[in-house]
Image 1 (cartoon, rainbow, N blue to C red):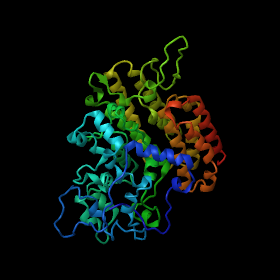
Image 2 (cartoon, rainbow, N blue to C red):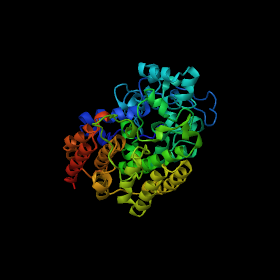
Image 3 (cartoon, rainbow, N blue to C red):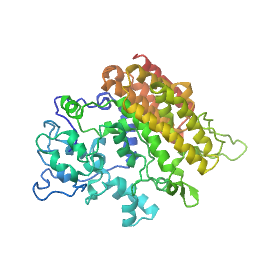
Image 4 (cartoon, rainbow, N blue to C red):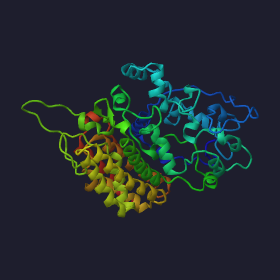
Length: 473
């Protein structure tokens, strides 16, 4: 069921091959917090749907058991051909982020989850309505499986009968309805449903949910894919899929699709307000969550942001993906960078004019973000371009926009992702990249705690990290 390859050599990702120390813990925490994941049940290897027991209905969700056969994806060791065949074991791994999706439901039953449920005043129907859109697979009758195979790969009813036959091909599976996760745009859209917000029931993360204790939402397509990786990109993978993952492309497309999704949701009237208030989930958290000073020693802690032409005191739109997308555009699509920057500033300015103006400006910005996604989806992202993107992120033109916590976290994840991408593409050795962990971890340390975040200290740490990376050129 999963598009995976023979384990001649587990190439994996640089996320696993480079020592990460504190950075790994921070990344894993961010990734799991983005979907609020925890622990689930083990699926018996023999719990396989009986073949010949009647063809499943088209588009039916068949559940994990339909994939768990010992000759399919339920083997105990990665020795299958042409796929690993131990994908279910990795999905269930209790000890690493690779098994986080299988643990998505049980978090609701744990103390933190129950506290959120209690504060929101949800009964069982409310939990199903508000939570299971992301903490369980839509269409599944077994919510304890959490986020299962079909959440990402698509409901198997229409394609499983041909998937396990002799001579099955990836393209045939796609033609029968399997989701094309090799496509950066398709993968981003699937992941964004839960790792940012989606249109499905229980897939929109309202500010009141976070106020009740839900982790802050963040999104980084290539990084999150790496943390969940359960496939090998070897010769078999290349033969079946036609291409290997380009981490830099995946990162850039992910930024464009995140901007697109955010603005799409923002434009929906039903998402605009929560009661009499605007829906605060669209706004930068730290712009409001600052220490309050009231007295003779009062001083303003906010730092002006040249990318947000708004008045002080107005909450700015959550724009970390816009900042990253601009950095990528300046290097890989310079003809679109100017229009994108102008439209992003116009969008921020329109937020102070009225909802109608903001939605109109947001739609114009989405057009450019879509154009960038199209451009990046076929771009190769050379070694020189990737170095330039990292330097652009840390350069004065972009770094002055890191005035709040979210954008700063996104920039560190970007630098790390792009460096690891070059390792995966053979552009930089793992040893050379590993020697830079101290500087990168210092940048992570500068965003470890939002309450102690200091923009100027962070910018200095980020610039030090990129200066060290520059030596690899």
